[in-house]
Length: 235
Image 1 (cartoon, one colour):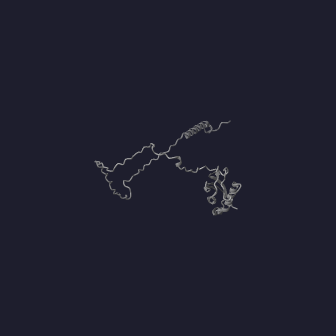
Image 2 (image 1 turned 180 degrees about the vertical axis):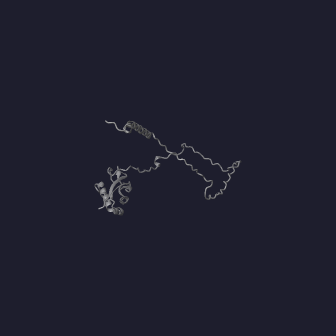
Image 3 (image 1 turned 90 degrees about the horizontal axis):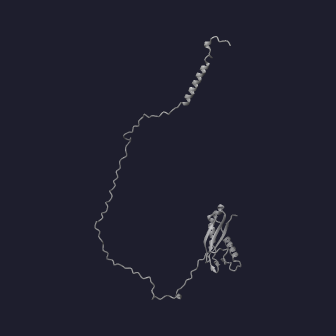
């Protein structure tokens, strides 16, 4: 290779040195960039808040309440006088609890014994010996079946669909339970149904039941609970 004409102007003469210097400068700048830290400058308020000595505007007037002083405490007298009681003293005479041996003892035959009716527990309709007799079933062979038949006839005869459930299309079964008392009357009526108007109509039908002959268990009149559903159905 032929040497250049002007070796002092050769740009590649010191290229290695320039490369090393440039590399060092880049590394120094990179280090400084990584290590550079910034801090938030605090805000200093130089303005002072001047509180005025007096508030602007007119002050509200001062209201003075004239409250009377409390009443003086009552003065307790130092001398206590004892009042004389001239009422006579009534003495209570305590009689002896011991029996008098001279008093005549009553004979057993002189005491009247009252037979109080015994309140027996209710006996279910399905197991009672003598079922309650519905009016018209006195001469029936099967009084239990006659009772059921007469009960259904009574419900059909007195049945009336309430107006409000009829207009609103409400229907369903109302389960009724009542007790035939020992005198044959109807009591303790309970109901459960889908609507209060249907329940009220079912109660009205049961309350119209006639008085019956009470049911008997071993010859004694007892309470007999009875349950029946009343079906309210729209055609």
